[in-house]
Image (cartoon, helix red, strand yellow):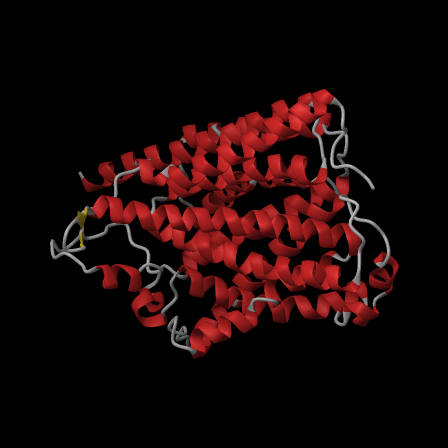
Amino acid sequence: TSQLLSSSAPDRMMTKGLKIALVAAIVLAVAAPGYALEEPGKPMSMTKQTPGTFVKLFLKPSKQEADVDCGVVTIPGKMAWAMKTTTYFGLWYFFNIFYNVANKKTLNALSLPWLQSLACVGVGIPYILAMWALGIREPPKLTNKQMKELIPIVSLHSAGNVGGNMAFGAGSLGFAHVLKAMEPAFTAIFSGLYTGKWNHPMVYATLVPIMGGVAYASAGEVSFNMLQFVSAMVSNVGFSLRAVIGKKIMSSSEWDRAITKLDGPNTFSVLQLGSTLVTLPFVVAMEGWRAIVPWMHPNWKAAIGKLDHAGTMITPGYLGWQLLMSGFMFQLYYEAAFLALDAVSPVTHSIGNNIKRVVIVVTSVIIFGQKMSTQAQIGSSVAIGGVFLYSFATEYFGGLAKKAAKK
């Protein structure tokens, strides 16, 4: 049976340290919003809410929360807000770790990135439809014109998803996330080109350590390959353009949330439905019709009986479970991320997103034994640090611009 890491004493100590680091990173990510990375807004009404109302609206995020009157004790609004927000962040990280592990296991076993991309967008559809049918979530209300306007956004979502899965399958999971940390750089540049509105020069200066760090890490990454690099860049372009174009299109009064019912999770659900239709024909074209019924695909049959990275026998049940788990966890982790975004400021969300990448890098080392060279670690740290600087610079100089506009 293969081992995750060498059984020598130094490696055992390193494994223990990495596990401690993983736990610490998760605790930090979950606890950070509750310890006031930002101050929640004051509620519009000073009327207290009952515990029943608080629980009923738990999955309806907001940037302010009224006090919760529990009779004997009253939970302050700030604490109630922190309880909801830390739950969103906790679920985001929890589902994301499960998604990345199951996703990588499936890609390692089958080497069918297009099928894996279809699973990511399609497996969650029964869950989406059930949420709407049962009235747990109000279904979106879109006109034919709005559905047509969503086509480019859906296509970009599909491209970003496929590029990401090809990058995850082509090399180290941790290094793929380092490459995908460049997404804010693409977003900043595309936003300026598409809208004609440019940020303060200092915002763009923070892109230097991001791109420089990735370049330095790439040069020192022993598992570096061009397929992973290009795929990750395609994913970055797809998701950044999705964000820029989507924000432009959905900023008009026609897209008012009160009318369309497109809150964060519903917006993502619509993208998932559309991307399933877009991705399906490409799966057939790139990996054959048998990929739609994967147990008939030669790669599925070839994987049966082999051992995975941990020495576990690969069976049909193993492959089916990992494929379904990765798709469902993808749906849930994105929904939790959207809930968190609706509860905090963009800069806090960006911080949480980058801590998430650190957690995934550490997870890839612990679970898959995918080590990074010292140079790759240094470059990765510089790149992720640059993303932190970018988030703060965007928030700070954007605030200055708004104040200047009001004068």
